[in-house]
Picture 1: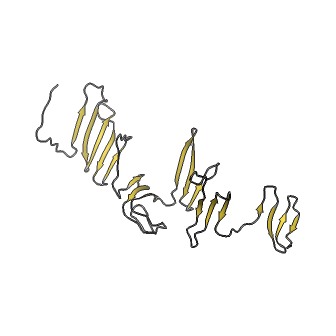
Picture 2: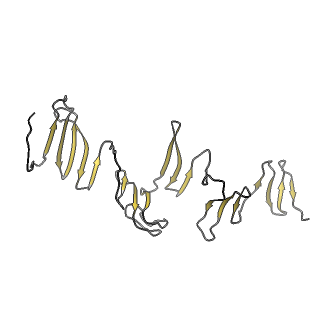
Picture 3: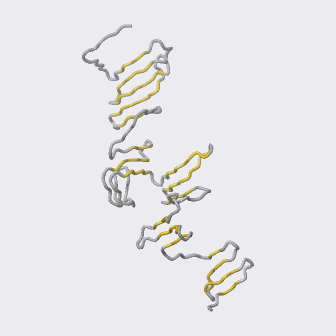
Length: 245
């Protein structure tokens, strides 16, 4: 095997400089790789034909777009970190983005390429994780594999501005302990809450609840009557009015 030692540098000057590698114990095009520069983009390609009539790009560093493009699966065996305030984007147009916001962010404040337009968003503490879909009316879906079948359990609907929970088993809330727990808190004046009262084994609400009818397990129900106020209706649809005693 010939070994040539270069103690300074190798310079290739051309309108399309190419550095080609050939692993000569392989059957071409196996073992054929090259590095080339075109329009200020550095590309790493693999041959698909022995005469390079066909090839595939694996990696490109493009100065014009300031991007590094991987066209194959990237396998990372060690810890990988993105520095503070560095955007991790998905899609050709950076449709979705994640980042660690290293400093505080005021409520309803735009953040370039992350929170756009006139945001309706809460204030954030320093070092907060932001996940954002900046495509107009784009959704976010969180799905799991349940016995070989994908189930989209949490659907954040961009066009409606709503969160949908798709689970036949409902929403399991709480910390797993048999203690009093706040389940739902509404962020308005007065801070209305729905809570679980473990001591008395019942739900508790901190504000009045407006309902249409109250239906009991035996199909009797309480409803509001324009003439008699609150009345009781039997399963046979017979009406009974309340009498003060």
